[in-house]
Length: 83
Image (cartoon, rainbow, N blue to C red; front, side, top):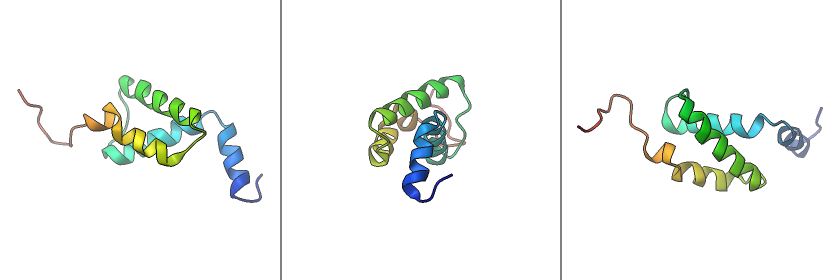
């Protein structure tokens, strides 16, 4: 259990699933679609690992996601690839 936001944060940081889960959720929201491809897993895990190394600095993580290849090279749904 936790009594305040600090307690919740401590619990979340202790769960090894947390950085990958939140990174995947943010990317899903930013891209407008799920992260289901096997290559997506590697990108998510790399971003999550960097976030952990930054001691969960959310601002840095959001910038990192926006600068990531997976975000910058994403296609809009229905957008055709150039020949």
